[in-house]
Image 1: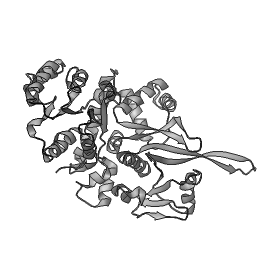
Image 2: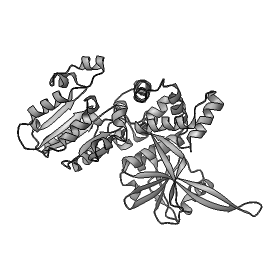
Image 3: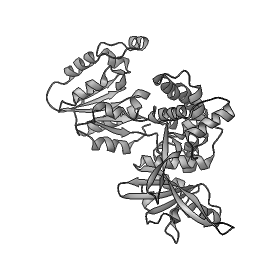
Image 4: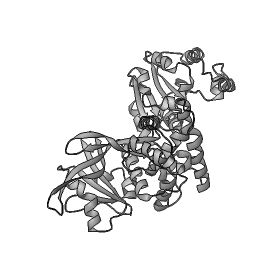
Length: 431
């Protein structure tokens, strides 16, 4: 069964022949290779591009490596990367005329000196280049700089809920429950049983994601960074900072770990796209606040697996899912904060900070969004929307709740919508 990734296909289509290297990034197992080698490849064929003018090469494929005189087992055993001279000789044999060719290169970090090779190909006007990679070196957010400012990133996320429902065999309610627990990695979406999904996610988290980071940064073990992952996973939607995590180690783990080390670990995870650190934005002061900040996981299933599926707090999980949806839709997202002044029992003025879960911005569009698992009455509504009241602007304000509910607007113009309706309708923020 094919999982459609139309949003990302459109991004690739818009970037065709733009004179840049299209770098497809994303957390491991999110579907980068399938997007490039199947979905985009078939699109090119449908557009009339001749198959012999599309050069696909996977540097982790034994069959492809034999084409350039390399042996996958030998490369694996020696730790050597593919010889760039052999690869370039092969490409020269495939390019038989001066018409346009498309290069689709998978796991390109397994080619020695790939940055220099690709920069050289940029000088050839008839080459349109697309690359993916799957280890932490390639997935690092600074990889674009390797291509001297001529890299164009397409960041692929795990499946959104709407993509997930395209292959889920069941009701929307059942699908959302499943998605909230197991997340949106494509392989997970196609598995039939909960046991298959939990085993896969646990294995990936322990043996792939953390191991990549340990190997890349030459850490002695994954014990300490694993503990940091646990703390971050337990604290999604809560404000955190490295010093607070360091203090937790000292008080609960009886282990000393410096705040700077914690900060490094968090940056390693963010570079590998496991997590996202989201800064707060002072709405009135119009400036970003560096710390404390919030952390959300790129895939909620991996977060749950790290905690052995024991902390399935729907309030926090729902907030993480909304954050990922906003990014999937192309928004830049921050946590909002506004100052509220109240009068205390002694008659003195008290200054407090009210939080707005998300400020989503794209071009001239701006939305304030509150994730509210349940609105039990008027007092709860006032609590959830008091930050909206103090923004002092007319941008749209949306409260997302965990029940089936079509958009409903109150007398202040604030919109309430159910989480499933919000996620499944790409126009839900403008209804």
